[in-house]
Length: 335
Image (cartoon, rainbow, N blue to C red; front, side, top):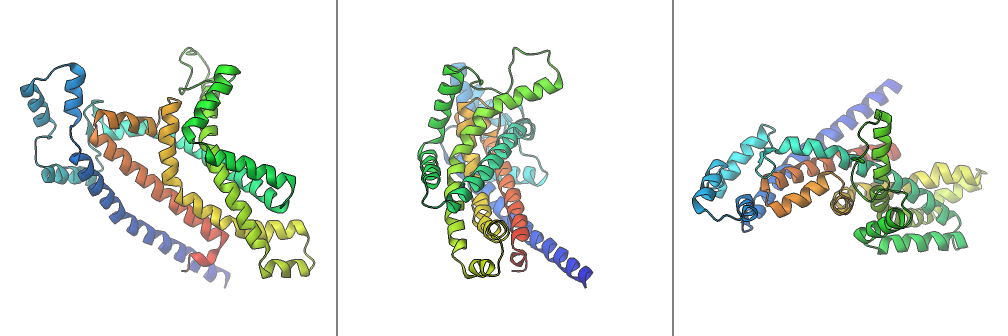
């Protein structure tokens, strides 16, 4: 009997993720179509930017470059050609950087994933912890203090938080680097020293990105726990003689985490948007900084490639969220 249940559970879980993958395909196609058309409707292109930076307005030379990169073709031909490239897992060519878009993204995706992963872990862990403490100590001085800190963190813009942290920890105290990925002055260091250097540079960007989302998860966890505490089955568990700690951990916290997991999946896209701001402020060499540069350089192929890669990342994270949901509440997989 146990094997049958396990087999059914594994099969339903596999079918669940198969449906998610099938649903993701038209979403990605729609993103490519929409972004391609919108970006190419904007005036100017990478050739105009390059000509402006070079201080030349040679129409013949610019026409030659557009013909070389296929920018002189009608929009529908460019779209069809790009669709064929995407089908071959080719994200195109970056004119400004003079290299394939896929290589550029692979160079930058590591730092962004590092920044996002640390920010997610820190904000969710601290948000769940302090939200639970605020709910358990409801209407106490601790609840008021945690709520005040969360409100302040939520009210402050991300870029302003980053600038204030730079002023405090880099300019005033001088204990943390103000930006960058590694210390270029330290060349001959061991692999462990290089890792520690990267982590040292990661502190301020991760702290900046975490503070805003920490506030959201703290407030949400507090409200969710207070709601669960008032449900009938919690009172029943207490009436059966279960200890307060056991009721809180086994019943209250586990069910209160469902809205946290939902919010985590919903805010992945906004977290990528926040990474653009944070990476720009701290000169962090990730996808956010690359996106910022591509916008001003009119590098449409690079922009679409980054958007497509970001969409894939959002879909993968949401599938992981669905997996977490199936662990917290197995009934969800069967729906």
